[in-house]
Amino acid sequence: MQDQAEKLRQLMGTIPPPSELTLPSLSSAHARVIAVTSGKGGVGKTNVSVNLALLLAQKGKKVLLVDADMGLANVDILFGIIPQHTLLNVLNGQKTLPEIIIEGPLGVRLVASGSGGVQELADMNETQRNKFLQALSDMQHDSDIILIDTGAGLHRNVLAFVLAADEILIVTTPEPTALMDAYGMIKITQREKKNPIIRILINMASNQAEADEAGKKLVVLSKRFLNLDVNYLGFVPRDPGMIRAVKEQKPIVLTNPLNPSAVSLLKLTDALLLQGVKQEDGNLIHFLKKVTQIFGGRAHGRE
Image (cartoon, rainbow, N blue to C red; front, top):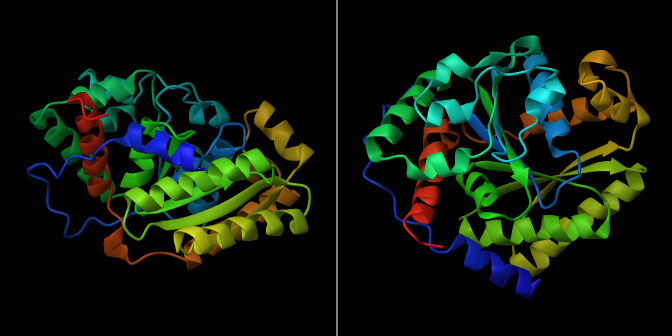
């Protein structure tokens, strides 16, 4: 773990101080910004993000789902949607943010990503950033919850979104390597962010006992070695029905809501809503401002 943390410190470098951006008024624009992330790929993070977004919409929430995996964006695939335009088109000035919004099932709005978006975000000048943030401010008035589906792993572009969010949902499986990588994500987040709100979701568990053991392990390790309280939100069972739904590009909470994994996801959604943060703590503009600062530091050689 020590070697891993040292490598992450080198990757992150020093996060630059807040810029002097003139931000739009935030007095009436509040939304929970939740980064859904994972320490490694293959744990079902994006599938969880898509189904959670739909369940939150079913609960009456206005949901904006942002695909922030700039390299392997696939939220649109799980929705069975082919986007004509992506976030990359916004960053290079071809489209405005409202023009790329895709209306998904149950009114969930999707911002699709695109390969190469990280560099465009890093290269934006202050005027471009202000314009981009203003567009996001306008959108935030129409959102209760913004889910940011990050890339997987402990890379700088993933950590930027994780550190910028006010709430972090780490998806992992019970396998030892996945748990170790999830702990690595917790460790670097705790080091770089003051009082992070971190929740753990165990996915693809064989049974509740296996999931609870894995979740408790991360809770205990975080408390003992990091003096950090993380919350074990719950688990989703390993389920052939879920695998079939992914292959068919049909979210399981829509096609088979009584399926065991769909029922578990509904319970997790209820738990997430019950554990909400103070309204003023979540803000999309603050989130994107932090992201652009971190990427801006990368662009100016602070790696």
